[in-house]
Amino acid sequence: MANHRSVSVSRVIEAAPEVIFAIIDDPSKHASFDGSGTVKGSRQPEQHVKLGDRFGMNMRMGIPYRIASKVVEYEANRLLAWAHFGGHRWRYELEPLDGGARTRVTETFDWSTSKFPPFIELMKYPAKHVPNMERTLERLSELVTRP
Image 1 (cartoon, rainbow, N blue to C red):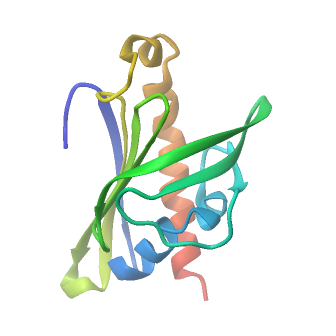
Image 2: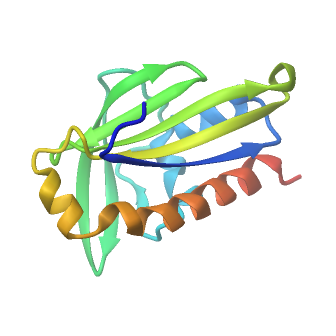
């Protein structure tokens, strides 16, 4: 889903899509692979979300805050995206490789659906998010491949 208001990072991970998706679709696990350092934990117990579900997160960017998100794109083991009140989306796309033994995971920050895209651009969030997404995918890889 390429557009001029999105940035993406991809990484091949040595795990099947369903193994990776079982972590991504559980908000209680997001802090374990977040590369930005802002996700502190889920506000509910373990749950596997699907299209239309809502979930809340404890966050910290300078000061602690809470945020609620809604799953807006979903395909089991392939696609998950959520948005919060600002409208922009975080998306994970999983592409099986080598018969499903490996997976190309693409994380996208998409602000084309934002309520006020110029604010996102003024704050330089797209450029700031790229290294965070690289760290996120590295941490996700470590999480699913460690013994």
